[in-house]
Image (cartoon, rainbow, N blue to C red; front, side, top):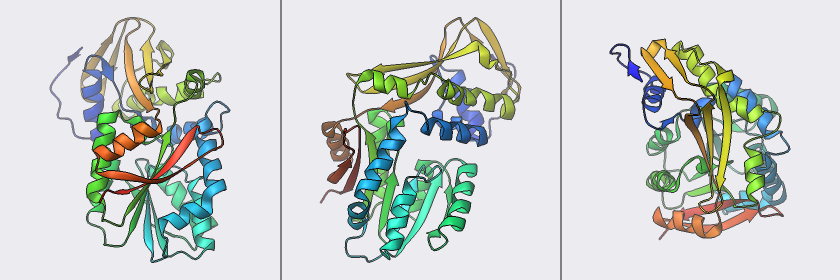
Length: 324
């Protein structure tokens, strides 16, 4: 691969696409799956029978909503509920409804990288739950965590739901949790979901559905490069491939070139050469058990207060605080 001519890279998207496609092996970040098209595809994924994560966490919230919200603010002194990677907020609305019905004093601050997702969620809450004070924010997690330091001294409950932490390998997960630690006051809490280790086939099926929706979701990063950076990826020349290692608990997604080819990305003045069956690594989906979560927390200066799980123990939400 080579650069046609020198170009000053400005946006984060340009910078990371250039870095990923000129690296060996090639990679692209899963955060770039999401735009208006990607958001809709992920909505379809969450409804797939193979994709257990959303249903399972929804089940946990339905069964434990009263205990969960009480653990957020035991003495009802008021708090800010900050959700990183809020998406459409479907599961969170269960907790918002419970907080509202029990007259908790709180402000909901959903955060997402997708402006489309935040606009949709804020609009939806304004119509359906107008009593909930909502302040939507757009940004990447680490950027928003830096902002948290500038917020008031009011108690914060920081939620990280779904498979968000699972997109990070353990060293980066610890880095992420350490940034949470630095953003927290002593009384603040983290409410975070960790997908549990389970039958390997169930994991593989969750990220490689038979209808091809997940493949289209992964390929949306190539579509975005075509649309936003004037690229000419032929999506039919790439296949979606999923792997899972039950020892490490790491599921990985790839886009694999099914022939030797060259792709032009004109706005980056870049030609990208692919050998037949060369891959682009696009996503990590990490799986855990209690011992791993405890270790991650301890390495980050945090400790587990309690956890909530579903009947099959496929998924767990952990309430975490700063260690004394």
